[in-house]
Length: 143
Ligand code: HEM
Ligand code: HEM
Image 1 (cartoon, protein in one colour):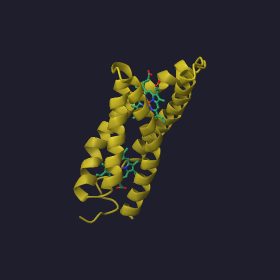
Image 2 (cartoon, protein in one colour):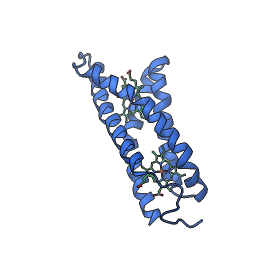
Image 3 (cartoon, protein in one colour):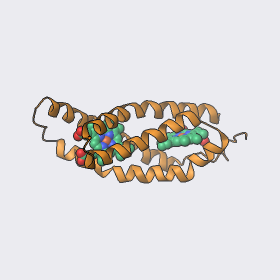
């Protein structure tokens, strides 16, 4: 099905894009802070004072990202899937989100905490690059 600039069902509202961009950026920044704390801990060094604040912010944004993911599952992904548009990078985005959510639960409740932390951190660092690819590919497709 050919895409039409104004009717394509995948188009995201400007308000959502700004909201999502801010939340994702803060999650990434606080994730980088927590990664630093994680490294310090592994070297047996006491975590810095800002650890509690950064951890709280990172954790508090988790349900917000989950809600945004739900929004995309309802109003963005089905249309893209049907049109076979941006499927590969989109599927990797979904995989990345699912891995982050599952390993975040694992950080709390699993005995294999180290494994969950490694997958969480690796996925967290890779996801912004996949998102960049997804956005550029999406813009090319929409032209
Ligand atoms: C959908 C996105 C994300 C969700 C839902 C999420 C969720 C969480 C949660 C709930 C925790 C546990 C917090 C605690 O210790 O109380 C956590 C820890 C952590 N997250 Fe994320 N996170 C996300 C993205 C990221 C990103 C993008 C990065 C890195 C670039 C990252 C790096 C970390 C690190 C380093 C930890 C601490 C691990 C440890 O203490 O061993 N996260 N995350
Ligand atoms: C967590 C998963 C996903 C996130 C966070 C996400 C996010 C985004 C963002 C931010 C854009 C750029 C919008 C713009 O430039 O105006 C975009 C574009 C696009 N995405 Fe996704 N996406 C996801 C999954 C998917 C999937 C699974 C598909 C397809 C099967 C898909 C198809 C598209 C298409 C076709 C575009 C171009 C949209 C247009 O301008 O109409 N996305 N996505």
